[in-house]
Length: 571
Image (cartoon, rainbow, N blue to C red; front, side):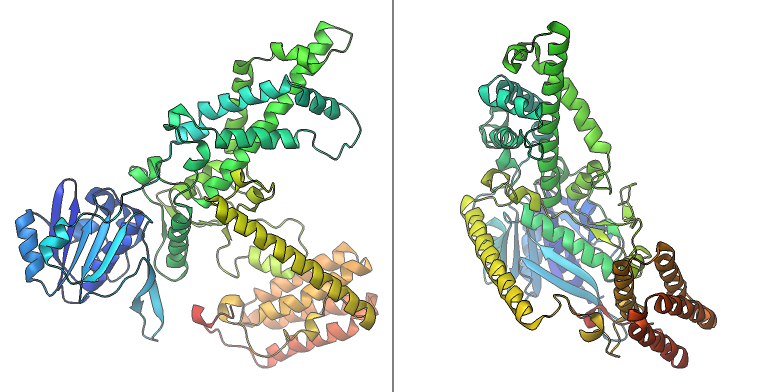
């Protein structure tokens, strides 16, 4: 802890708090302001997400006392260094001698005995916050200075986006289309065997989804739903990334932001919540087509033996019935695993509470955890090492690429149309370049009669230079896993028995998990499994012999358990 020499004043709607702090604590308060707190109570609630070993554990222990305006000005004027955080005006001002922070930064708050940086502290101010650094102004001007720009904080009405208005809007639009000529054609295609691989409702789904997102609504004060999805995504991504860095580099546990803050109730939407919202809309629209078709088919069966157009049945399809059905669909979607992982409810909750999702990693403030990424029937040794946690926790991430697949601005991650158009042009240029490179590679392969993929034995990955410990470098297991993966791939192409492949994976798992005293026995078992593979498939003799030599080398010269720093990672 440094000597407390920085006078820090925190203003909110209730008044002011002021006191002398050391520089580390003052910087930490600025980092906490990254969360866009409304007042001092919210500052204290967010504090645990930014604590390190060099600052107090609780914000309530900070020596900041309630003070009058005149007392605060006197204290600031008499101090060598000062920082002003105005939570009402959403601005931060620092004196001329205070350390430069910038809007986006990361500080190592602790240096260990080996000189390695630890305890990262991330600062990522929201776009609507003003930062005035190292100013040379009279302190009265600093305190009284009005913001230079309006405060445009995105306010999200999730009751409209996720609630009854969404359900009823989709129900109304789907029913209207079902009663149109386009709808009749789609239902007709759905009932035929012609072009069965094509979704007859695809274009209609895009139309319903686009209309919902791009239509102004009275319950949103004239805004349209898409506008609610944008405004803070990039900022929230940085906050989540900062929390992951803090966890991975020794800064402490993952801590979820609290639920009793304004940012949770109506704060901006992050990338993963936006991506899941896209999925929810598509799920509801798809379910609505399914319901309409089933109802129409049922009506045709019960009312007449003579087939009738869907249009004549639309009057029997009521919005309330469809809305009730879609409400059940949403409830089910909310709880079901998403792509085999955690359910949307958990994914969205993590996004709203600004924490990354690490498989099995505890999140302080939440009872659920991200589901483990079980690898079912995977014959890859590298995947099995990952499943065993050899590379640390596996973090799940939804990039939202599906929002761009329809070539529609309405669904894009980009807030502004010009940014979306620029991305589309970039995609087109990349696609053209990849097509050109594919043709060139194909022509080169035809001339040289070479393989498209080079063997790992010839790619430089068999060098004796060790990987960092974080990548299995303490025992060389990751390098061996790459080599074994190619052997197993060849066995699969040769049609090798599953028992043989399973034995190789099982024996390699036992080998890499062996204690030094058990290493000779586990090496013997793995060597025998490799010899069995070579006997059955002679084309693998050279690779098996090379692999076995590496096992023997490790027995002769065991590698010490080293703990390489993150800075030594090869990427």
